[in-house]
Image (cartoon, rainbow over all chains, first blue to last red; front, side, top):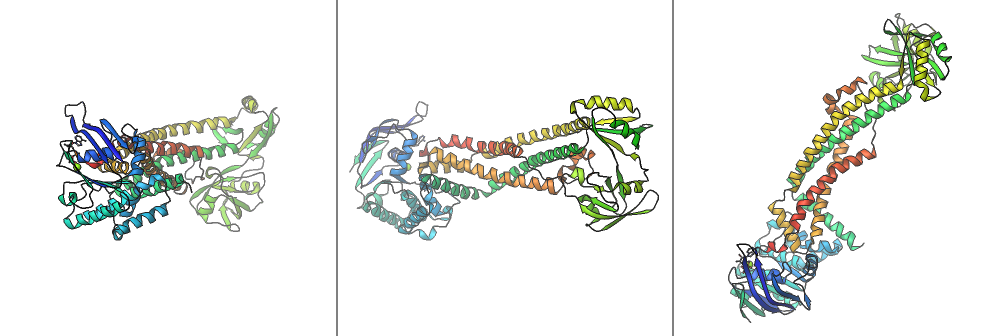
Length: 225
Length: 377
Ligand SMILES: Nc1ncnc2c1ncn2[C@@H]1O[C@H](COP(=O)(O)OP(=O)(O)O)[C@@H](O)[C@H]1O
Ligand SMILES: [Mg+2]
């Protein structure tokens, strides 16, 4: 579904602190599968996710979504694709403080102009299915790590994306909560979603639900299975 | 409903909850903003209302006034002068007026006594302005008595009160019949306070004034245009001062709003990044921030304007007294007639709501074109 060919990404290009975070990645991500990017800290996993998820553009190389080359699209189109195709669960969760968990879940849908009642109903359903419904009216900053993550997952799902992207989803969770998260991933996969994660947690990489593990080091692929 | 409507509603809802979670900053902004609108609107409402009062006064005053001067002092003018004036070509009408001031010891106040000719007041009756009504708490049917010049008691029955058109004109009016007026002040028939003259052709006013002056050398002639100019110069000077004040506060406001609104905290930047990452377009973010600015500035505008309205028209512009005292030349104490000019409201609106909204949006614009991938760090 997503194809990368010779993708490179430089930060601060042309300056003295120029840094190549990705140095030529060829990769295909299959629809409906769970793929994990693994590697030591600084190896370029997060950078790779931002390119796949249309949050950033590669410095060179091509990113194709199905048959469409998206690496050269202007920002507005990228936003459109991102909104309809990808749902993000960030490492720091990135919920907005001061507003309720429910409202946080609904935020990605506002620009689409959906009816507010329908939207709230869908948000409630999602939160119920993620067992976080009791916290719907709590402010985001009062939630524990696991709760915040499930709210973030609900937010990622509100626009019903094909692909769910999660950066280091188990980094802030204990084993119990990590297993709970993998249960959610299983349910997502069962409902036909493509899941992309980064992790260096063996618990994640060795689970049955994971179809592919891609290993990175210093911005290059070292192993894929 | 169309998606567009839903989108605006959703954005507005989010704007409100967004503002409420930054209560301190929002409230602080609103208070200062409201105060500035209040000052500006007060100045505008006040100067406009007072100009209008003057216009009403002048519309009612005759084109030419003739007073008799004796030893440099204003004196009563005899009826033969009136006849002489009536004989001058170009004079449309002339009448002798009777007016003066009456001190009421009971209310410790001065009333303006006048003898209206159309319609006439019946002897023994009086029509009073609402300042008199308040001073004496008099109602129609009540009796009011005064001592005449010779000590005799003169009684009036209140016939009715005058509804207010202009505070400067009618608030302290005390309208009586000619007989009562003469009895009260001991003025013999055939004598008047001054003469009011209207001319056939307004362009001939100066020429006619010269003719009157030549025919009646012991008189002083006052033209309405001259009074108008005097008023204008007083207003212009006052307004000049107020304009300086106005310019000052607009400048202060511009600096203030730039300071407050344009400073994007790290937290706000992060939030914009999150919104963009989850699928908001740059234009959506800007619309949100514009709505925030508009909600703040609109409500501050409305509250400030309302407070200014109350201040000027119900509390006599009390806070301005030290600055505006010069206006009291016209009248010692007044309550202005409420009057709002749409153009004025639009001007104030433009100079307050508009710059603030711009000031909120500009920095957001810069922040919103940053790549959304920063939130992944
Ligand atoms: N905005 C940036 N500017 C400069 N260097 C960056 C930036 N983002 C990431 N990097 C560098 O790119 C490398 C890869 O980062 P990242 O993709 O976050 O790695 P990982 O997620 O595998 O830990 C790191 O060395 C990091 O310091
Ligand atoms: Mg990372």
